[in-house]
Image (tube, rainbow, N blue to C red):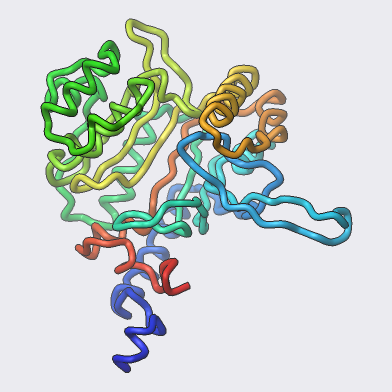
Length: 329
């Protein structure tokens, strides 16, 4: 390898052996789903709608041509979720997709604005049964992985920080963050408990989660996103996140199939975005229509391939498992 070319960004940031392993992992994933009877699909990268989630920003491009002489804004997908659910509503059965996805403003040790996502949906599964399959997939790729554990979101916060995330106030969570020595807390203006819970999770809990697989489930109802909410005291979102050696890999839902409730959540997202001065983006009306026409009871999960490869290879940055991250693209 020419040193000057390496310094200028000509060569990949991942070693060739890592890139070979990446190819082997992709082949094993496809073999796993073939064995499970799950069909591979492809859906558009560009859409006339965007994610409304205030925590995620879409990259946008513009199409000019037949049908749009003045130009049509198109959003690069942050996940293939909405069109995959339209396929489910059309009767596709179990499906999966491996694709590149795009998120603006995300770059760092664990982030690149363009990355590879594995997403799959299982009609007839709840989130617990889907956790079983996620674990089976990981074990097929890393047989030596430590036995997994599963813990409720509430129990996790009580175990590590002695607070109840369902009842704690913003002030109580702020004091907890101060007691834990998180820098800059005094200048933070997080208006609701979820922002503080995310901060405490990333700074205090994730680094202490230990080796092996850990599924965290039953999130606060306010963090339901596209998951259904189970009534109770307190009500909880039927969703999970998977951590491997303390790094978040996957986010799964027992999927919401109520079109009216999904529209209400999208409208609430748009209100939050407008109040925060974020771009107001069009919601996916075709997805809402598909829900209204009937989507099967199912669970789905999105798993970051690049982060999984980091853990399989044993490297510290996402750039080390990618050929050309954003600064070399």
